[in-house]
Image 1 (tube, rainbow, N blue to C red):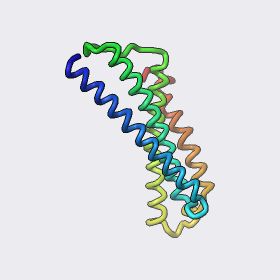
Image 2 (cartoon, rainbow, N blue to C red):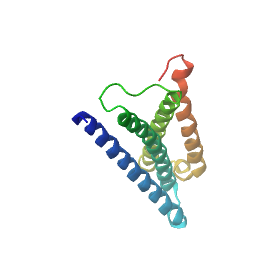
Image 3 (cartoon, rainbow, N blue to C red):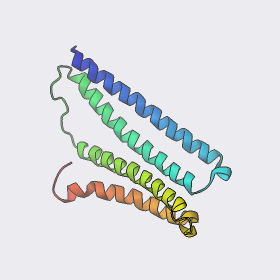
Image 4 (cartoon, helix red, strand yellow):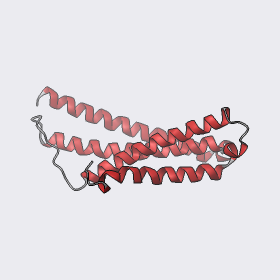
Length: 158
């Protein structure tokens, strides 16, 4: 067992623990918002729930990737290239990029809402229209999946 092998195992386990903690915190935040939905229901909490869902999705994707890497590290401890390509590699890459798009765009939506509430405060329909933000959230998730699949349509691999 080489020291680099132990470092890889330590990093894999540390990443898995961090991902579980991040997912648990996101679930806790969503549960608090759902439990207190009468007091906390506004567009900001809707966008926070969207960001938490995106974080849970991304944590799951990275968790699956680290489990795959940990399994490969444990099967070949000599430090060589030990990640064989399989059929699910393309799907894992697509899910990883889709999750990154979802997290990025969910934060962008929160920033847009803050911009509207502070700079464009006279545009009340942008501040109070939950339907507008629900449609934008749905479009965010659809676009995250479509943008991430573009390399496959262009004939290139991830």
